[in-house]
Image (tube, helix red, strand yellow):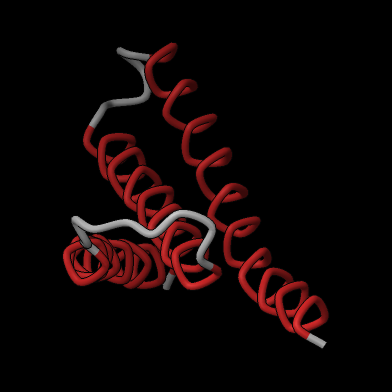
Amino acid sequence: MHSVNLFCHEFVVAVSFLACILGLLLLWDKRQKPDDPEETEKILLRMSFSYWLVYCIAFGLEKMILPDTWESVTMSLRITTTLSYFLTFSCILSLPLHKFAVHSVEE
């Protein structure tokens, strides 16, 4: 049962890796407008996708490396996955807070 849950999590991470790349491609915009609230939202979304992409890459590398032979690398990858997970969470949390701040300034 544990291996099925692990496989399911690995599959979800692999699919979300592809979704992150697609999301970054959709948000790619060569023209930038300074001090535009919409641009800030796009930046927060890009940051969320980028941090989650780092999580997916570090998670995949951690699963490919044998834990007994490369212990320091494995520990670094675990720290990277943890930090990128929390950075993704903070960016996602910042999106509605930013919208609320812009909405209260407009009123």
